[in-house]
Amino acid sequence: MKICVINFSGNVGKSVISQHLLKPRLENSEIIAVESINSDGTNDEKIKGKRYSDIMDKVMEHDNAIIDVGASNVEDFIQQMNKAIGSHEEFDYFIVPTIYKNKQITDTVATIEALSEVGIEKERIRVLFNLIDEDTILRKDFAPIFETTDIASISINAVIQENELFNRLHEIENFSSINNLVIDNTNYRELIQQTNDKSERLIYSRRLGLKRLAVGVERMLDNTFKELFK
Ligand SMILES: Nc1ncnc2c1ncn2[C@@H]1O[C@H](COP(=O)(O)OP(=O)(O)O)[C@@H](O)[C@H]1O
Ligand SMILES: [Mg+2]
Image 1 (cartoon, rainbow, N blue to C red):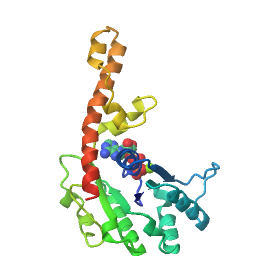
Image 2: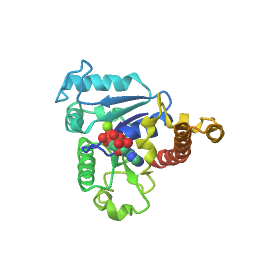
Image 3: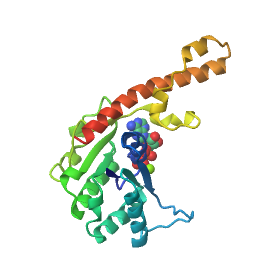
Image 4: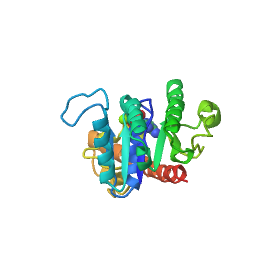
């Protein structure tokens, strides 16, 4: 499966979704990040035709690939997709994450419309509501997005809750996946009891906290993945 994660806006969770929702659930998948930085370290403002071909070559290298298009590249990316007729067909899905902020909601609608104009059908354009909390009323808070139901697939169950875990993963050295936290069998409670050192206790207590969060987040993401591709 080839999945493109895309939005004109930054900070909607494209990278988090690529890394923590999609990659662990697509066997042997690779994330291809389209950023403004070239492999030689120079900063190339525009994605020109050659660069688009290179990106598509990379997509073709894998059976399962996730392409994370950085916000500053989306316009060029869609332009090139328009030029290379039919190239959008390489992707099974276009995931458009969105969050409850005016700019991001406006940009999400624009992204959906741009994808639709390229010729991508409703079934392949999927909205993913991110950073959701108990107070969110999806149909009301994201009303402009629900007006695109004729050109995009929108499910009120394709949701990722706001969770502090995503911003705390840097606390762990050599962190590789949320699942690694889930399967960590270290008995932190015992370790805590065995020491009187306050700072050591704090380290164990934080690890235990992260593990507990991870169990819940993994469950949630399993469910999100299922709902997103229904
Ligand atoms: N569901 C979530 N809960 C809490 N924080 C989140 C969630 N999704 C994303 N974030 C945080 O929001 C910020 C932006 O996410 P990121 O994936 O970098 O967005 P993008 O790649 O679209 O610019 C990051 O700090 C990330 O950790
Ligand atoms: Mg990103």
